[in-house]
Amino acid sequence: MIGEDGPKRAVTGTVVKVLIHRREERGMELLAFAGRCVRAGEVHELVATDHAETAAGSRIDRVAFLGFAEMECAGVVDRGDELRVNGRVVGTVLGFDGCHFPNHYNILVHTRSPLTGDELGLRPEDRVEFAPASRTGGPTAAAAGAGRAG
Image (cartoon, rainbow, N blue to C red; front, side, top):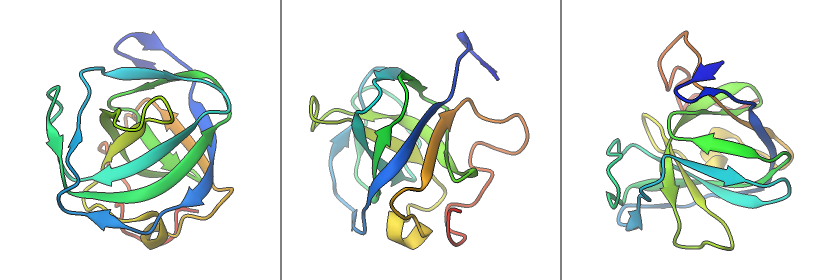
């Protein structure tokens, strides 16, 4: 699929830890960058939010933690990419929080309703994919609240 900057490959990975908690006043700060390069073997945290603001420095408070995923290949994760787990769209990349960097990025994923990884039925070894949004359905075409992600 072709994004604003031209075609790119999907970044794939594997869930290595499922998270079960949420916060209403987390205080994450959206980085100014619309995309981040990731390397094969890196582990990044996936965080769901219903915040929609994408301005640099926006405070992201209402979050549900999905889990950690190991990247299987190097690539670029961009704002607007779909996060798919086992082929099901969970949401779209809102941006990045760097409070734990260089250990890992928090990849913020916009969903209609922020659910934890446990609530979504995520399991270790589930397949994760970041790819340009599909042209069919909206950016959160699959409700992030309907059962297991696989």
